[in-house]
Image 1 (cartoon, rainbow, N blue to C red):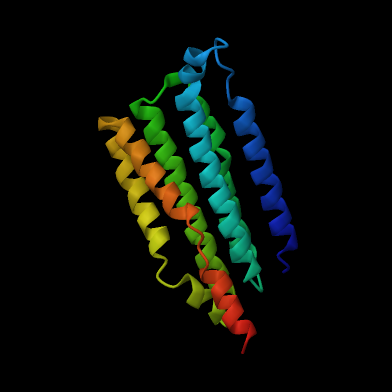
Image 2 (image 1 turned 90 degrees about the vertical axis):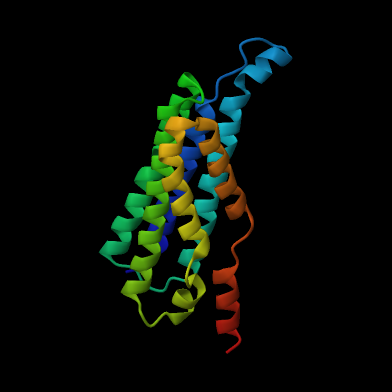
Length: 195
């Protein structure tokens, strides 16, 4: 089974999710600095969410660049990832209406946790369908960034019930870690091409 339709579908869903997110941003209630400052928490959650979705999309692109074969399990893993990514606009709207408060921030963490879990399932499914693709398996390796992200999201969910701002700080830390380009797959493909 080819991967072209999977890539195209994923790109389309990600584009729609980003569009919905930006449409959910509210205008400042007044045309002055106080009005802009009033919407700043919502804008920062939007920017954080954009960084997360951009990181998932970027890494998804690299993952599929190294993928030679897919199957039904890969398609379901990809749909699982996209389902959770599609809920990001919902939780940021909830945060926009309720503010930085415990339950919406915990829900945001749950959506991020399950998105990251979906991505990990997708990676493992792609490796399982083509075990001879040692380049991809070697590139992913121990995946310390992925495990660190899952742990941080898992810890931030109950922490949100105590201190929502500490959870937001953890989410921001994960986003910063992923903004540093992950060149494992590119490097493995380059090495494989020189053989």
